[in-house]
Amino acid sequence: KDEILWRAYQASWAYWLIGLFTAFLTSFYMFRLWFMTFTGSYRGATKEQHAHAGPAGHAEHGTHLGRDQAASRAAGAPAPHGHGGIHESPRVMLVPLVILALLSVVGGWIGIPGSMGGGNHFDKFLAPVFHTSTPSLNTQHATPGEVAPPEKQTEGPEPQTSRATELLFTGISVFAALLGFVMAAIFYYLRPELPDEIAHALGGFYHAVLNKYYVDELYSILFVKPVVDGSRRILWHGVDQSVIDATLDDSADGARHISDTLRHMQSGNIRSYAGWVAAGAAAVIAYMVWMGAR
Image (cartoon, rainbow, N blue to C red):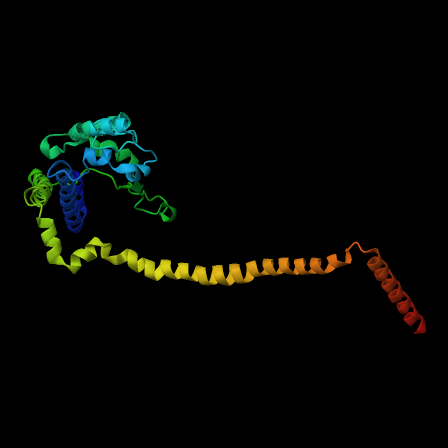
């Protein structure tokens, strides 16, 4: 963060202030995490509570513990489902974490700046990737015979600043990190009751920050709820049920009524069939007589 803040200051002091405050917050919440995890009273479930949670509790795990399993778990044996108390991570997680931890310790030595006697090799590592150039003269409209000036390099030597100035800003960034550590130690180790007292004193402002200034609720009221209600009333009840379902249901009902009417003609009664044939023949004869009379 020292290098990031130093380069941010060279661009704008406002960026530097934002980065400095962010560095303080990073140190504060990381040490808050450390103090809440490794100091203070134990806040997790005891082994006895976990081993004797009863059938209802173990039903959530998909298994029911017998007496031997409960006894072995109470004695500190690891739980088969992976969360039976505090235990070391498996090697598939532990080995990458150890590698990252070692690199975080030795990696900084690669980037020691020149103000501290180093070559800052890490700073130059990505220079070929970000090296760009912009022509300072439009060669398409250059006068014949005119020599274009050399391209302007956007990645060049570092700005000339005094060693004392760079060390001063390095000290400020280190102080911000130490201040975050001290504040976390006060709030979550020496005086753990302070966060609750401050939250109670802040009242509504604390709850606004806790609820992210109610942005999610506002988003739900302005966008989510109208879309859900509109989809339910218009697309579901209006289009799906009233139009699509009604059309399909009415078509099915109409087909059923027509078949119910027509199936009476297939009664199996010979006399009924003869009557329908006679009626049809009479209708044909009547039609032919009527056509002949015309």
